[in-house]
Image (cartoon, rainbow, N blue to C red):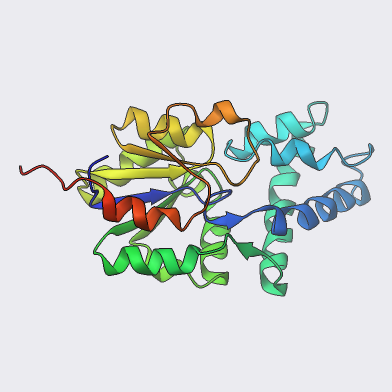
Length: 227
């Protein structure tokens, strides 16, 4: 891969150890749904939502609770965000090891850094602020904030708005791989999160087992071609 002028990161399962925030919030939201009379079953297995990370929220709830009403799914959107915000305020959630140091190093090399996430804007921005990484990024892009139907569209908007000519897409789900491929980017698959099946990362140009590997990957990548 050529040395990029920008690197675009997914949030969940790439920068952020999502389960440290999501699992407690997930159980609390179903307690609230039952208390409000919108859901009467036991809480669905947490593996359903962990396995759905990277999807748009609308698709996540169809998979997590396929027999629930539209009202329950819409309310789950609101409650999950509330519970995640509460969790971020109380602490205990984690980034992956080496994220802060790696972002600092890449910025020092002059790389423009971005986030492109299928999550809602308040969540993406809240995670970045709570963990002190918001200032490393040129901008945080979210499907919720831009009302995009796919990460392919979200990344295309990012590239156009910032006039980016060469970039890497870094992520752990098939939506990240697709966004990179359809926008002609270098693709780095993150194999450390474990939320998706191995085949989700097919199409990556490089796989990394630890976030810190990005620094060496950048430093040893080929210089951009002139013109």
